[in-house]
Amino acid sequence: MAFNDKSTARLNQYGELALLLNNNPDPVAMNDAFAGRKILFDGSLKTCYDYRDTANGSTKGFTKAKNTNKKTTSKSASAVTGKGNSYAITINDTDLAGKMTAWSQGALNYTNDPDFAGVIQKIYDELNPFVTSDPTGTAPYFTTPILDAVIKSKNIYVTSLGQFKSAVGIINTAKGNFVALSIPEMDTHIKFMQGFLTDIAVKYPDFVTQFKAIVQKLSIIGKRNQGMSAVMTYAADDKPINTVGEFLITNYPAIKHPKIIHTNTNGIIDLLQLKVGTWDGIFSAKGCIDQPVTVTVKAKKVTHFIISMVAITPPETTPTV
Image (cartoon, rainbow, N blue to C red; front, side):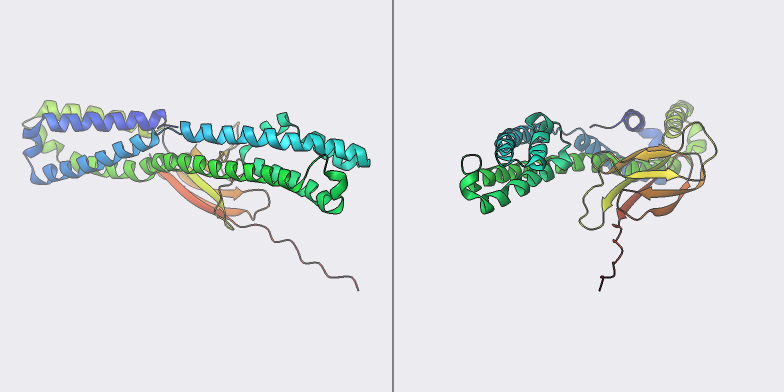
């Protein structure tokens, strides 16, 4: 969950540069503008460390609660589906029996987190009508209190899943802010200070040599951190588009592998490496209207998109008279 290797390497070099500036007060003080920028650099570096510390935050407790509640709900739901299958056999309902059999505890345990609550709701929706239509027949198998208990367990799981997603979101936001906000800010500070190195070198050549060496390392790291990233959500409720979101570059030079990348479970598209240039791309997700975009890639820069996908409206049907 923490910073990736490139972000960590870049932050380490910022720290090296801060150490150089702090250990050499005389060359820093040669020019008031340089000294003033050093103060701004220190403030921005503190923000970088704050983002790092947030990104290093643990989701252990939230993960454990989510998984425990999922397991508990799976156990109670599978007990109901087992009896639901027995009831289906009794009334000779093969369709219901097939559904109940499919929702075993093992199957429920391996259901993806975003889909789990919906599956539990389907179990309730399948069995609850029989309680009303055949209360005497269903009583030995399942009752309203039993079904309601499964829904209550599901709701507890939904709450813990939301807390887990929130914790992950905080971490991912910190990581994204470091890339989208801190790196450009730190690069600006460094470029500003580079404008005074020629003057400083006259009296403090070793300081300037070390400064340039750190900047060179940052340049090499930056060349590996260039392209675009994004967050994709549904416009209707701002929920993340989990794994089914996709971004495709349509006019990229012919290469062995197409420039295409998918969202992770939190709706995030991690860095897609791209050459400097202007590229046409399309964001897409099942059931949503495609969104075309133009990506302008500059050297050692990352363009970040926040994409809200609108659902496709089903066509209206003309009633038959």
